[in-house]
Amino acid sequence: MSHTHYTPFTLALDFDGQNKRFLSRLKERADSCSRCRSALRELRGWLTALDHPDPLVGPEFVTRHGLFKELLADHPSHEVRLRAADTNALFHQWGLVRLLLEESKSCREVNPLLSAELAELSLIAAEHLEPHYYDPAHVADAQAQASANYGDALRLLERSQAARRQFASANGRLEIGTGRTKILSEVARLEARLLHSIGRHEEAHRLLERTLAAHEEESERSRPLLHFLLEARDDDANG
Image (cartoon, rainbow, N blue to C red; front, top):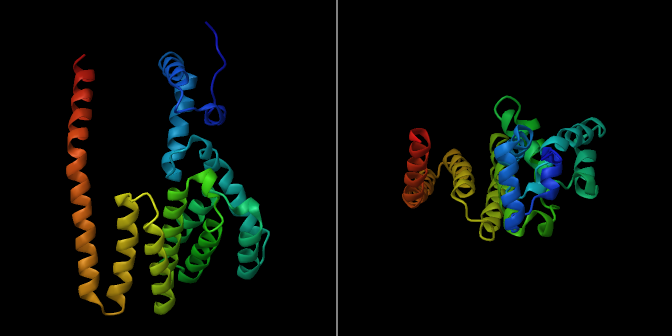
């Protein structure tokens, strides 16, 4: 029987994770239709890259590049870009926040000033993310990451006091975030860099030790699940 083929965009709009009937129909389509299966795979890729679980956010992986170009190319100075990122709701999107963060990280060592400017833009945009749309805990995570990465960029500019304020802000936001070890460890690792650079080596070491312990605890919790997944994979291979 014929059906309308999903695209990643239509799937993002139609997706209803609470509707068992929808999920059953989606599984049937993904099993029987290569185009629908490809759409589902592409949408999953978008969400993985954006580090957000809501399918509605997925299309921002595509649209974010145009927003990035508009923010940087259409605004001639950093001050004007900051004002645009602060006041124009068009730029208050998860995808753009993530892209600014990625671009800031990619040039951190070779162009610290540009890295700091991009990190600040990411933070300004993150502060305007709508909690009801993106989820309050995930917004807190995004803001914590943006603050920490701005702090790390400031470290390279030798603005230690300003960097410490950013990490204090990041840690405050983590308290209302998702609590994911991935986010906590990223912030801790960047803060340890700052502590090390200002001669507080013991504090940096303790911070990294706590992060390692959290990773080990999470790894221990995930072992039963991992064992189950490996068994399922082996069953599929043998079946």
